[in-house]
Amino acid sequence: MPKPSTRAKPAHAKLTRAKPALAKSAPAKRATAPAPASMRIQVRDLMLSAKIGLHQHERIANQRIRINLDLAIADLGEIDDDYDKVVCYGELVTGVRHVVGAGHVNLVETLAERIAAMCLADPRVLSARVRVEKLDVFPEASSVGVEIERHRGNGGGNVTRKGAS
Image 1: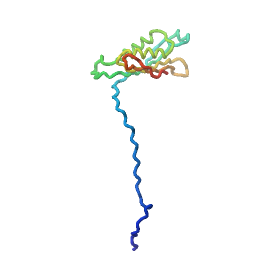
Image 2: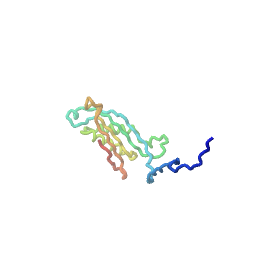
Image 3: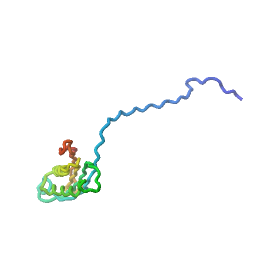
């Protein structure tokens, strides 16, 4: 039976385990105050008839329009099933009907701005995203229109613009 070798192994023959590379830590995030809680109220696919457009035929006849609202509402605490503590979507729809029925407007952008201003008149509304679409303009398209988002400024009733398209 052969004798086990007592010779030392050469240094290059040693098996070594590589140390794992240390992951770089992400920079510390700056502490920020938590965003105030809010809820959203949505009105989807409100179909109305409006006098809207630049062309003569649009000034004479009403057109079908579709309106969508997405409003961020300040969290004012527990609702406790109390109607007076919420923004009423029925009142929003009535307000939109009044804005649309107030008379002819040339541009969907103008109508969207007026609807956003009506929504932001309620101090509990923090922001309003308003989409106004004309439905019967091009036979190849289901609609054409605009979506805007307006935010209440830090100074109370001030409104800041965000992304008119």
